[in-house]
Image (cartoon, rainbow, N blue to C red; front, side, top):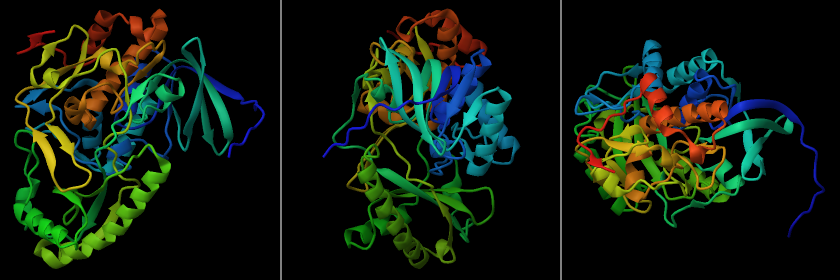
Length: 439
């Protein structure tokens, strides 16, 4: 059945140079970058706070700002981490470059950074659609308690994670038939953190510590049908004694399908209350544990990716290239989780790689650019670059590019990448070509 409605008049309630859609790690930094580079900027976020997977899904640590002691992501992304640390909610000096965070401190640090940069925030608002004219997005249509309204724009940065604006504008995307699973993170109190202190040590070569004893026993219970499918578990100490955050519960899903993601969320909430008694019964350090909170939503690893001007490849990650339009770097392990088992694929990288501007731009785009986990990459490359520090670095590049495009009148497909790269360097981004092949 279909329902046909007459065209409705949607009021235009504001106009901006740059609209950033989605207030996760990429969106926060994209909005700050656009505003600091002179663009009148609006950030639209569906929750009542920013942070995305780092706050709504409790994902920690933020990975990763260094490799082998070398700082590879700096500038605005690392400024956010330092601001969070100043609130007592981050540890920024680990050799691995992982930054453990407190989600509440991050929310406030990011909000302050945005407002101080003169970004206009619009919370509790969903992206509903967009208006295009000759391939250019002229308005972003939103839905919230005020009804359906529109905002005019000169450029849009799609940081929704699911390429919502890209798809609404009619640009091509891809989506795998089998996606990596979603994970429901949890924070537990009452844990004997002294007894599991080795699990809180820094990552070695990008790999977080794990208890083979805990994993082994949970694996046995999974084979017996007593334990749901799980990952890790990776256990991180929070900023208070007895508190930990755990990456454990997972299920296969397509988070771009509301029906399927609803099913997955229901499964994970049920599993949450199955696994806590198991932890209490099986492991002495958890015998008195209690649930402090779970993520407001499950953490999502992948859905749609754009068809971009360039696809970052596995070879680009394993054998880094000196792309002339390099805008940021990545170094996280290639990390691919399986939706129907407790196994994963991990490939440790020996050095950082370069990410070119072209992976952020949809083919044929005039004024839409992306940042975060919907950019253009093959599966293995995506398995590394989807992590939050890398998403923030891409956000700085996309927001800066948007401000330049508005000022100079460029289409994103015709960007002056030399100007973009020099602007990013001046604002603290790390862009160099040590140990790279010619692209």
